[in-house]
Length: 382
Ligand code: CMC
Image 1: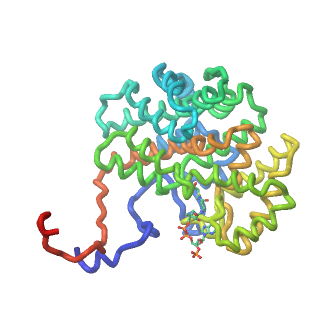
Image 2 (image 1 turned 180 degrees about the vertical axis):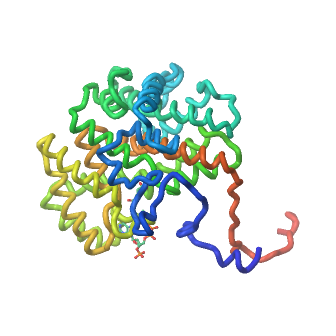
Image 3 (image 1 turned 90 degrees about the horizontal axis):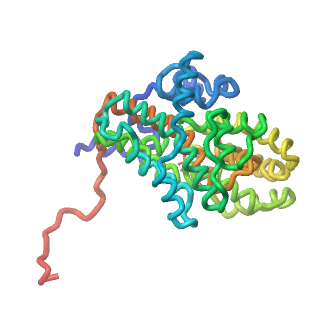
């Protein structure tokens, strides 16, 4: 290895350009920062497009026309049911297993029942069809497993409900209010895609060996699970729970900062002055708190946000408001990261398709720091 290449070591791959992509842009207009999906600013997409439109945009490159959306949505609604063996498996998996691990298993099982199971890994059209099925089936898997663990009867997918309302209905057993449906749909839009984050990178690395899209998604789910990535929304809720009451918040955060604790839901590898997704979602936390008639969590969150932002210069990321948002929707904490995954699957799939369309095996190098070259002592002499 040349001296020049060993100098290129960047721990955590920080700042390394490992891919070209036409899917998401974190540079913003003329490098001003921000988030764009295929050239559209997230602020312009939010509240205007649905999750279904966003998924179509990511997979197909453009926003759908009305008839394209009708067909896409009809395919998603028709694909929501799960194969019986997966539902049986949910009844056999120990109920203590975290839903994120069960979701990883679910996607693996779903791959065996996909009608395109034998399509070559690089078959673009088959990969898009597989992506659509995963987008449709992952919410059902998350909801069914949740109901089974809670000993509740299953609520089947409803063809007359959109993606967001159908999921909330399958989990809670009641159709959400329009405010709840809209806020959930928006959170899915914001979670759908985020350039070369750890889980997307993991998915791209996996398929760069010409492995299949399901393997890429399984790898991505395993990567998303960690608390430094998607697992942070569950951890962010635990922060609020630990604080417990607004009057404890100031003391709690000052103690935590003094102990140099990592406050989950704050900071970001790329956004240093603020995560646009967090700014958009915060407004909805206030709305939903008013709808459920309990602003306690907003009053706990506010002083924590203020302290971490001013004292550590670490603004909240998307996981900070989403934890509260999902709490107001009566969703169990363990579902927060699986919900992130069932939204992000559209982004992962778009990246996998892009990778396979222009594939080059990802095989970086490591700088060796172990013992220098040495001779082997036979076992009898050691
Ligand atoms: N709370 C307290 N201190 C922090 C935090 C935090 N959340 N994040 C970073 N720092 C400190 C860190 O301790 C370090 O301090 P020092 O220089 O004194 O050692 C400094 O800031 C730099 O930290 P880093 O880990 O090198 O920075 P990074 O760019 O690698 O961090 C991060 C990115 C997301 C891993 C980190 O901010 C973090 O751990 N945040 C909490 C977990 C979290 O919310 N993750 C969600 C990320 S966004 C959406 C998603 O992927 O789900």
